[in-house]
Length: 164
Length: 83
Image (cartoon, rainbow over the protein chains, first blue to last red):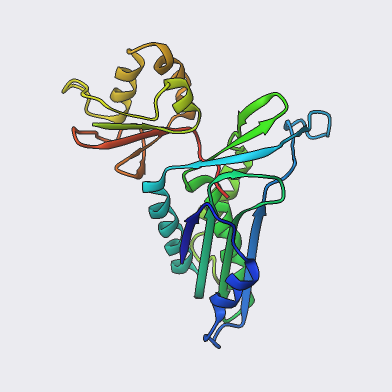
């Protein structure tokens, strides 16, 4: 299941719903992404860290849902999953706020853990969201990281037999 | 043709969406980008760096050589940063 919404969500309740009534599920893996209060300048030390007051997530509504459905279907095709959930928020979020939740349920832990990792990696580069950070110097758009592309690429290379 | 702009493409182009009627010779995304650049001002700036142009035609992520036609919805945006 996928959901794109402005509102917050309750992780515990979502997890309960995900596995409710399916006793074939032996494990659930979850990732929750949060807004941080600092942003690094990429130098690798803390010298250029900047405080952020908030982050605004913009998205392409007509495309977002399609993209998330495709990403979810890809995970389901690769791993034996009993249930999956992707919730992605948009709008203005303050530090500490939940941005995204991914949960995967399977009979065994390997599929759940790998599929969860795969989903969050692919969301980074394949879901049409853009983040605007509010800093003391004004708004700045978050750049895509080369590391994110590499993380996406890893699953492309690993595709055959990823679930074995 | 409906054109959409997101994130800093929207800010630089100065518009979130618009209707456009490019000439018949504009048959691909790349040619559409050239045509938009020729409008100057914010467009030239928005499309200055080809390496950061991402595009979707009718809500599907596509490459620059993808065909475009009247009636299509074409969206321009920087690399996505979801999650």
